[in-house]
Image 1 (cartoon, helix red, strand yellow):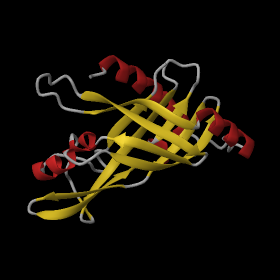
Image 2 (image 1 turned 45 degrees about the vertical axis):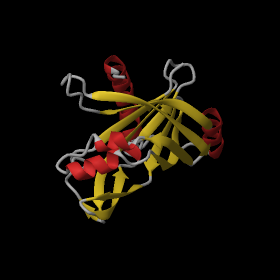
Image 3 (image 1 turned 30 degrees about the vertical axis):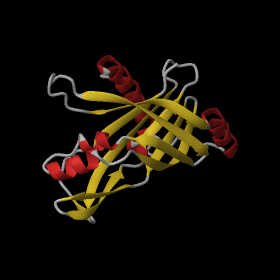
Image 4 (image 1 turned 135 degrees about the horizontal axis):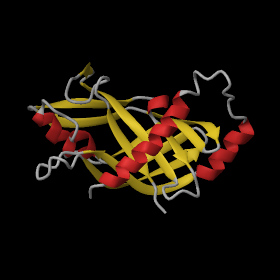
Length: 204
């Protein structure tokens, strides 16, 4: 299911959040949260969240249709740890170009879980930085086995916000920044100069 209006709305919201989060490092007036404030943020966001993920996708029947949406879930288990479940391999495959065998191998791989480090940076509204760990795909193509690693940008690129009263209470984004095959950086569509955004949200 495509979400044109929604992604535009959420994109604007997250742009505003990005401005706040990115400036936390450069703004000399910024004060780190106290342990009590971190605990308060954690208690408000902890547990399992069922939501949706928007990712870039090409619809050959409609070239203006550039995004797709899938059901996912994630859990915040400590004040420094989050796991994203059911991260669809097809969402990664959609971004791969220049190697159809690799693209098909990733598309047919089971969904993955992404373990993330998190760090709360603001209490009003609750905002947290996200550090997704590498995702590994062991695949077969071209007549041999390959180890494919997906690497993500951390912190100011990858972050989330939670506002309990909002129509979309939790919103997050992570950016895939690099793909390695057998330890070597590739140019197959996911690179530091062309990162891929994955956007998550819950809805009341």
